[in-house]
Image 1: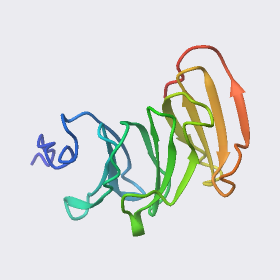
Image 2: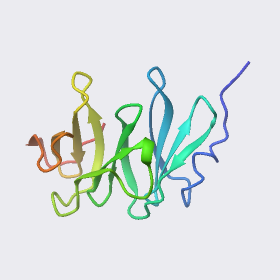
Image 3: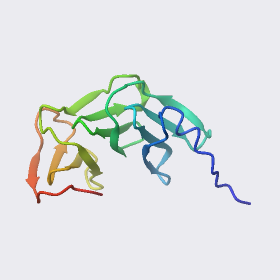
Image 4: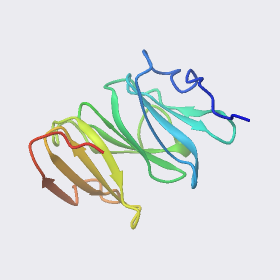
Length: 154
């Protein structure tokens, strides 16, 4: 019995042409977060096989997304905006904006999280920077590292 579906229309319902970025952790968190090209995002429940909620934030494409816990995810965009979202009260505004375009001015290309401390994340950008954040302190990054001049990828 094959339970794998080829129907991606439910995940692409908020995207203008289907371009999306995904993150999930099936073992711990029963949902998939999908960031769309138009700046919106969707939370798809694996338990209910349906979209639980969506952001309606329109803007620059979400270039990277990472599930942090059962209640939070973080998204990065092409205009260098890094947003922390709370799935319990999701709407068109993130609960916290860690980076906006005035901070670093470069597209976010990847987001990683610490498996040792859930409050620490790292963000890579197109100009070789890796920024480490403690999400409890959204005013300043914990550390900024210049690794090289090329794009940082997952």
